[in-house]
Length: 265
Image (tube, rainbow, N blue to C red):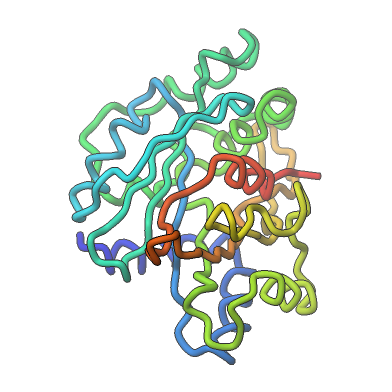
């Protein structure tokens, strides 16, 4: 599978549970024409057949190289970012939850479901494969949520793209991320306020913002149905360094706040 096919398939899976993304994309397409995607992100569980080290080869297979690695100690995550030699191909960010750092009761809940993951050769369809385990109960979802929003989200949603990202650099109507976020708010969409609407600074060479996640009703084990956060839409503005090279990496402090876009509150 080539990168173009990969992102086409991802987008269709994404808007199935994130209809706001198609609506926001059309908001900018109306004034800017083509809306360029800066990057996508995925979540997974460590120490399982779907761990980061098993997903990485599928990304490399499409011509990517590993760009950098990250640790989010408070959220108990590690991550890799990947970049393609074609600058028009979006970057990829994959993180995994280090479940062995969670409390024993929460580890036990996650382990019960991860034990259902079949160890088999993976192909690119794993990135839109959703849950490889049964739906947890509402009580289990909340127990995991108390320690790790990331873990609860992943337990309910599974392996699916967590967000796409509008490249503000490629918009023609504005090059200001604050203007972008204002348009999104004016259209009626909630914006992530954690750490301020804009995460990062021009001096740090990267500014990011995002919507709050869409919501969808899911039926949990035991038959209870509840509306929970699904995925969100991000916006990124990149700046050139002293040599005039536009920064292409990620900043842990920004990403840490962007993760909050799927908070249930």
